[in-house]
Length: 193
Image (tube, rainbow, N blue to C red; front, side, top):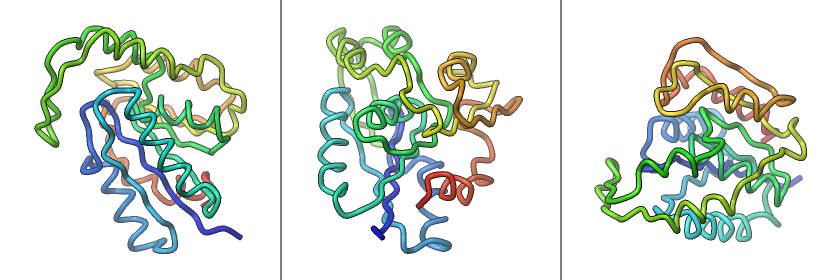
């Protein structure tokens, strides 16, 4: 049996230092040190981020069983990777149509974790559209963790997109997904790692 690898994919203007990434890291270190955890710092631009994720997957896919956790834009990238490789994924307050949302963010950006400054342009929105997964081939590959008071994304988009998938839709919360600490063990179990 192959060893397990958990690929945590952060969201827009986030980083491997995010709270949810750290929760998964601490859980794996204390409870499942056999799991290799990879939390890449993704490039700011969609095409570069997608290529970075492909490079990681191609490095490990022959030797490891890979499971995904994707937060926000990372959930969108998880859908894209699932469409290509069939990896199981837990998506947390995922962006379903980020190309619509991020059209309002064109211009200069600064990542609050890394202080990296960059220019988000219309071509980057097109790069996002190219990664779209309008239909999930195997909804049972996914577990949606969603909170209804997400101030960034319309939670109903995710609930509709992931119909047929396992879902935990919690009243309240916010985009960061309040009390994520409740879930690491269940996430690892769902991903069969």
